[in-house]
Image 1 (cartoon, helix red, strand yellow):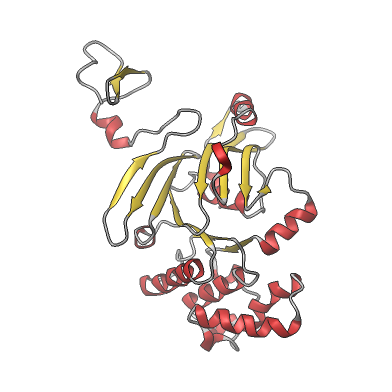
Image 2 (cartoon, one colour; image 1 turned 90 degrees about the vertical axis):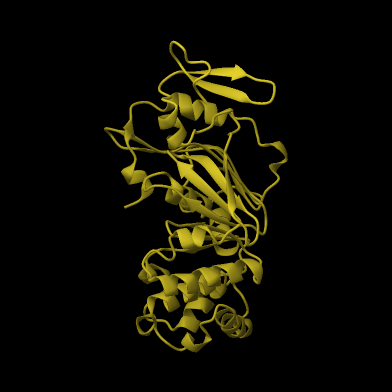
Length: 315
């Protein structure tokens, strides 16, 4: 089941889409991945389902970023859009100079072959069962018209870098789940993509296998030069990257930044429209409901619950 299918039905999204279409472009487009006020709405005859509600995200080339959030928050929808498998309803999305809303069929096909790689959570979805590990890795190169002589050597090199050289002549059925996912990383990086996307790649694995798969993703980032975005519920994964972005209700809500080997510091994200999501613990602690009062202090903004005696007892 996708994130979108879990979202709550909403009655009317025309105003949200209008705001996204007229959004100001981000300053400088200083990123390999740029999402600005991104909206994704799924419509049926009876309901409109809102998966992304004006999401902002900026990822610099060379980053390894974890995307976290509750089921239905919009994480997988975002990855589907960035991979070229889905189209946003409104807003802006650019990856490595490609405008994801404006790409035609031919450009989209080239984008998926050369610019992005994708690793699914389901191990059986990443590999063709009747091809060996080496043959699976060479297949994307064939579609990208890499010369035949170069394919085998590059595929063998990728398998070695990712720690699964011993699997080269085995069919997927003869591999463990962790080995299958590491081979899948090799497949996803076969054409040297600028961006590698992974949707819960350790979700079906035990702890040891999951660590080996994340180590492969880290090698893809550090040694193969791919910018990595990984959706995960695994705290062991999210705590090993410098930057963790939390998505809530279709928007980026907080980011945690970590220095190498140090503790992380969490920041609330103020989007381009001036919106932010207060952490739930603060909302409960200070009794914030409905309308809140803002006060401009010399060095900060105060947030107070609306009601008698509010000032002096809020945030």
